Length: 383
Ligand code: HEM
Image 1 (cartoon, rainbow, N blue to C red):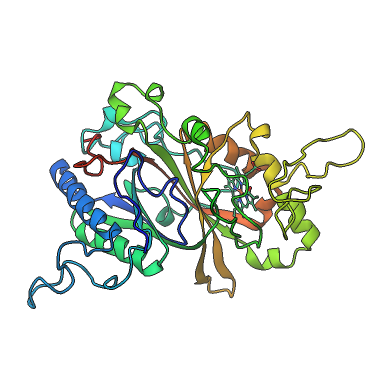
Image 2 (image 1 turned 60 degrees about the vertical axis):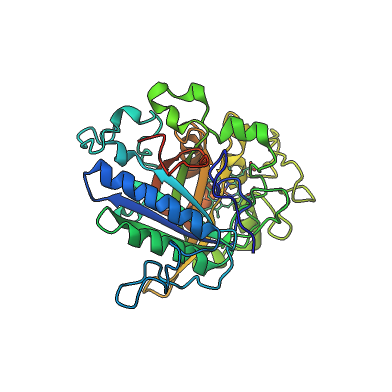
């Protein structure tokens, strides 16, 4: 029955202990009117805050607005608990007009001068197989809840309120969190069967969050200070080749990840939270192979870089060839995605043995503003 505060210094849904379910939606703004967009953001904020308390989008929304009108709330969350619903908003590079990747894009809303330099399209990575219909977008809303119907209801109603102003570009459902963001949570497992989120940043590590997650004043000039206290969100839809993986021997699976499948301990160690030993001696091969995922993604091998992972498992049925269309919907928050996610993904895309079993099919980057004060609306500091 838990209610997560919608307002606060930070947006909810980032270091909030990860809920069980996700509905993530990316939108395109289909009007050129700044006023229409601002009005929607205000209406969205009010509805979002109500829904996080377990209420309808407006008072009496599902049944109380007369028999001869479509009800303003679609009703499927009536009687359900707030389920720790969080709604987190982010703005994509395309909302701000021209970027180095798209110099000719029109600045429809007069936001170009407010674009933080790091809010620019991610570069192409080796082996990317990105689908346009699963990538990018002018803005996103991440809905996380412990009840899937609550998360879906929230996105459905926000999308519906946006009729004529925004249209859904793509959306993704997720089940089964693949990371912990708090020491109070047990490490969950991903679709490869491995514990995922062991070496993640957590809500308790305030210093590390300041260093690696929250945008600081010195990161941007005056025009882009609206993002101070916020964070960048990287979303990658990563398809996992489940059937070939299931035919790989346990020893191969463990060598690919660099941890044991049972308890999640680093190879050569006993317990999940033991420190991995990456030593490569001149004689023989290292305990954790050079191509292991955890070696390549570890801060020691990336000049100290860390990120906050907050992804979900997904299974979108089967692909028409009898294979599960399943994988990991990777979500990560960082203070500067270009300096943190990009070098990490470059290392993984070219060297990670896991690449043989995964394909990145969607990608997007958003800037998520800081939390909301008492009367603030989504994006207020930007507009
Ligand atoms: C660690 C799985 C994609 C970054 C791990 C671990 C597993 C795992 C099992 C070890 C447990 C843990 O510490 O969480 C996967 C799978 C992926 C995937 C199945 C894709 C389907 C990515 C991507 C990135 C990434 C795209 C970033 C670009 C990390 C990091 C760690 C990690 C930073 C912790 C490394 C450490 O410090 O020990 N991943 N991962 N992973 N992964 Fe991934």
